Amino acid sequence: MKKNVIKRGRTMLAAALAVLSLCACDGHKQERPAAPEVTGEFDFSVLKVGQADAIILKTENHSVIIDCGETDDGDEVVDYLADNGIERVDYLFITHFDKDHVGGVPEVLGSGVEVDRIITPKYEGTCDEYEHYAEYVEENGFEPEAITKDFSFTLDDVLFEVFAPQRSSYAEDDNDFSIAIDVTHGENTFLFTGDAESMRLSEIMEQTGYTKHDFLKVPHHGKYNHNSKKFFETVDPTYAVITCSDKNPAEEQTLDALKVVGSEVYLTSNGDISVKSDGKEITVTQ
Image (cartoon, rainbow, N blue to C red; front, top):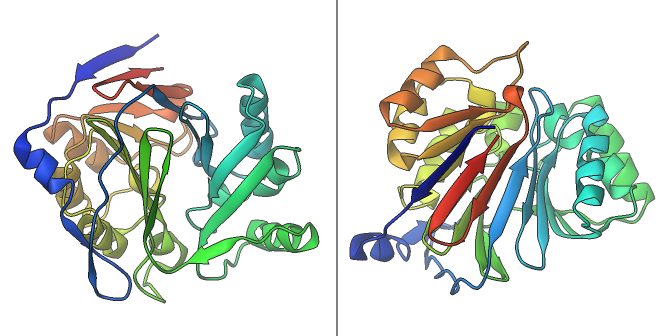
C-alpha cells in the first residue's frame, strides 16, 4: 500500500487569493466565496475503471459523484456506493458526454440510489452512450441541469465551485466542454478537470484565478497538449491523479511535466486511489 501525508500551510497571500474575482459566463466579475470552517473530514475515491473517470466524494453527511465511466463501469460505482452505505447523492456531475464519462450513468440512476441533481454542460453528445443516457433520463423522469454559468455550493464544511465552459463551440468538441470543479476543505484545495483540452485549460486557469491547488485530477487521462505545461505550472499540484490503463497509459510528456513541478503522481491503472482531508493534512492511499 502506498501512502503519503502532507501538511499544507497557508499564508496571508493565499487567503487573499481565495477571494480573487473570477470570470463568469456573462463576462462580469464576481467574488469567489469563502470556505466554511472545518468541522470534520472530507474524502473521495478515484476508481480504477480503465481509461475513464469515476470519482465519488464524501463530506460528513453528503456525497457527490463526478462521472461514471463507461457502460460496464456503472456497476463499479454502484458497488462502491453500496459498500460505503451511500443511499443518496446530492450532485451527479457529468463533466462532458464522452462514453468514458457518461456511459455508466444509467446504471447508477437505475440502482435505487437517490440522486438530487444532475449537472451537465450545455451541448449534445454524439456517441451511442450519450444517446442511451439521454433516452434513459427522459423515460425515467430525471431532469438534468445543463449549465452555462458558474455556481458554488457548500456541503457540510466543504466548498464546491463549479466552472462552466465559456463557449458554445470548441475545436476539440466534447472534451473542451468539460465542467471543472474546484473543491476547498479548510486549507486544502482540489481541482477536477474532466477531459479539458488546451482552450478549456486557459478558461479554467482564469476561472480559478490562476491559483495553486494541492490536488489535481489530471485532464484527459494524461494526454499532453500545448497548454499542459503552463497549466501544471499554474496549478502546481502536490498530488496528481491520472485516470488511465495499462493499454492506454498516460503520455510521457505529461508525466515529465508533472515531475518538473514536483507532483506525486498516481495512476489508476495501479488501483483505486483514496484521498482524505482533515482540513490541514491530505492523505493519499493506493
